[in-house]
Length: 373
Image (cartoon, rainbow, N blue to C red; front, side, top):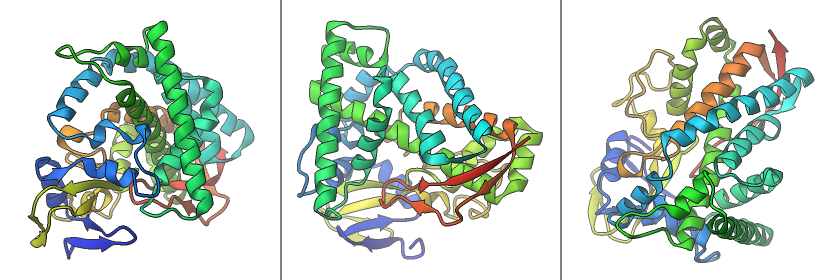
């Protein structure tokens, strides 16, 4: 696909852009390649418009610039700092349970509790809804050009409606009783006399929930798969814990959670030497761009000494993921503790089940056995 530069994906007829230089060029040209392509992909004809799909990632300048400014007034480093002690407590509890039991289904018993707990605290959501949050997130990310069947359509509609009702109630409650939390900050945020509307708030909270849970949960699960298959890497991290941040960065480049990012072509243009007419939907293949040999030397090798700057795992430019720092912090804390407590990880079930979506990639089930240090 990289050699061709452009490939057609079915169903849906999207054009896949696979080269690093082309992916970055498209990110840098929002006048031609519209972020509204993401919303188009999340609102296929069978689903239709929905507040939970109205995210900041699907806006273009000047709307995007103003909305990101509004969000940034509430999404500050101090909020992340206040979250760090809770993250450490979550890691101690969940990894401690893994150590006691010795064998877990990592996705549902370690990765999901960690990420749901973190994003739930970040947004000050009801801790009793972590299971529902995961169901909402899974349904959101399972949206495809055509439903996989009648039950899939019913499941997605019900999940999005439940998520909308819940976030609407949360927003109203924070308006009545504001606190020192992210949602209250978003409700209060104002730039040039303008505030986020309720549908915009719902869409942004949905984006944070889905992105915050899936990006980190998939990253942690794939990291554990890597450490189970490459015990030499685990030995290096145990011998030198200072390498954990480098492992996180290389893992994000080597096998990112976000594999594709849709865009909509606003006028006739050219991509990789191919004429592309206005109205075309394209998908930027982020994982392929991160493996482009013209950008990264020996890209299919996992290299802890690699300079990963420039990777597009969190997008690029004005649409770079606002939650990148939180994802990296969670991954560093969790993997640091896992590498300290265990000297080996073994796959109990060698066949791995994966998600079925172009946008994100990760195991849906990963049965692991841990050998204590």
